[in-house]
Length: 326
Ligand code: SF4
Image (cartoon, rainbow, N blue to C red; front, side):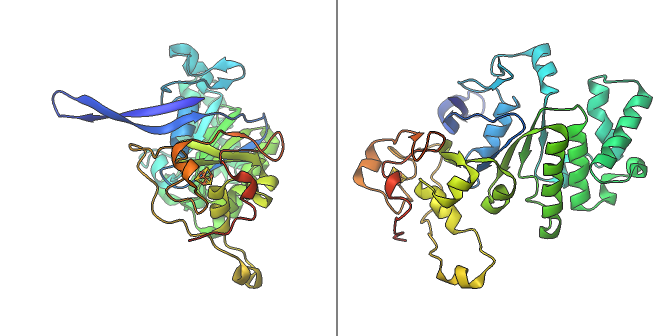
């Protein structure tokens, strides 16, 4: 039941809170050790904020985040510092996340120096090993980020994230800024590293085709809430929420014959402002299946097809055969 609200203030000297942006609003899910949960949704749905709240870059407004049985929302100071070692983040843009003034050896070694994981020579050897692990040559240690391509930079960022032997990695759109030609290579690397080091991933993306490639389970987020959560194949084959169905209908299919016959669901309008949440179901302003009840009563997030498939829609049983109106 995690919440992350940001206050909206007015006034320059005497600031007063005039409301809250409900970036994450009552979200619950679990990720099994060694597995990948794909978190999808449009820009502004709250995915990145959720990832950052889990890793405690933000202190949650309410709710709990359990990691190995410990509530991260409550840990502070030295205890938080220690537990952070177990959780690392890979950011979207490797052109912005690597400081251009430092060599890549320095960048990869920095977390190890901060956490004092060994003597200088040990850290250097580990840095060389990490470069090899992500498919780069250890002789690159003394080069600067600008000497590398986008794909190579993301490999460097991954090496840095691995430097403290984390258990959980939050990958926030890790391939969105990369050329299509190198995306598959980076995704394959992430999967190979997961098997090798038994990593657990929260994989944030707006791209359902990318998530399908890497995730075991998928959560779909809309305006701060998870609206559907299921095993990957079940979600792709039998979505129970109109928003998921609309997102899936926008994924290109490489076969032109199938693509031609396919029915696209075009959602009208933009994502409403998280400062002025719609009443009832948050999706009702854009939902092609909305009825009057949807404008009044918020649907419960509950098990649908099986015990492990959850969705928040009053009419989920009609979703698979629903005819889009727009
Ligand atoms: Fe659409 Fe109503 Fe279901 Fe919300 S509850 S997704 S508005 S049909």
